[in-house]
Length: 545
Image (tube, rainbow, N blue to C red; front, side, top):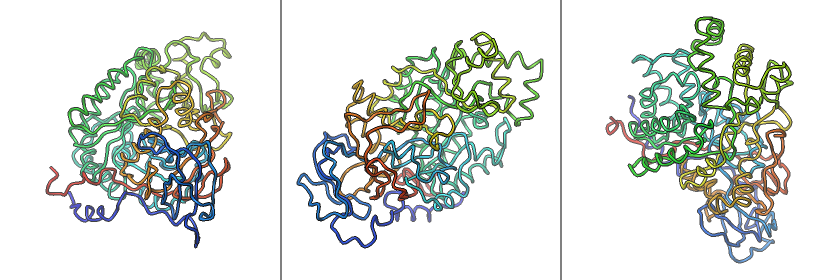
């Protein structure tokens, strides 16, 4: 392995892992660029709320004052009486790793109060070279990236369903090393999906060791969130222990009716791992439906070798009974059961008229019964036509609440960058963070406001080495959101998803308004959240074995 001593020296020159944002104003002569006056501060650290004025200068919070700041000292003075001022929200997982440049204003995220997106990619490509892409961005929000296992494996093995040989594994290690050197926060996996699903645990451990040497963390969409939930949590713990790397489970959930309530055991496993000295966290989105491709309904081995091989297997009369039986098991145990109305199309390229409708709607239109046998016939037909993405209503709210209340849980959207009115997204892309504050804080009392804000701000900030973000203290970067705690709510639904949340008034990124008085400003002050996530854990060549 090449030496990484020079890299470690470079790490000491980066205080908190992100680029310094440009000054918020050009030549402003006032004491403050912005004063937010009269609001109630929820500081992101879990402390009780308090009333104070906040002054911002050159992208930083420079005053948190219990005494009113003078309007004459500010270039922009905003009265936020009756509103809460909190740190900008940090989204632990969004699907933006190669597309954020196409949605530079990230409006469906910023209107949720999100100021930082973490692109912990699971099943797609990663930017390459990572540093070239990240440095080229001119966007509204801060963005962090990971080295992607799926992309890395595809570069070396394509869609092959086998383990790498010695040289292939080394080639994969080299790619992860280069991604870490270029600024990745760590290694991310999507072990549910092909071709990552073809990897044995040992392969992931070897790549995680590389990320660990550079101070990275391991973030995962686990291999199975249904019948294999507990085994998958144990696999994550095994990887973290063997690679000596901090671990984070993305969108922790228990899918399938048979697994409802199993979050109690999965959380216990996380607690046991922490007691055993493993640095382990997790996150979730506040919905009882997931969203992913139709490929998850099939045994993953049918996709080995690509589309033509899939067609051959699905037309093979000797294999088809086995494939159908495995699809039946996925429906009944892992996903939506015998009710096809619980599978809702997001995007069906072969027949867009069904976008937003359900598999039961399609069955009814064809005069077919609403049962799993019909579902098997239809999904095989549709997969051969190119597949689809869908929303799977297969989770229980008590599991969502139990996971949300866990002290190590953070919040994410699992969202896509979307253009208003285009496509049929999961409502989480528009409403995840406001939904926590409206439904789970205000209506259900699942969390206090201070607890919820901490899960959205300082907890993820610290997870990604951003200790100067995610908190309202003097000297921190001015990533801020102003909202009405009595009325904030998500309005996007599974039937009508293109709806922005209500009562988020202002969003500030690095001292500049990206949302002001509810209106998009067009500003693009976002910076690259550069890795690694744990620079203090990076080791020299001589100490890494």
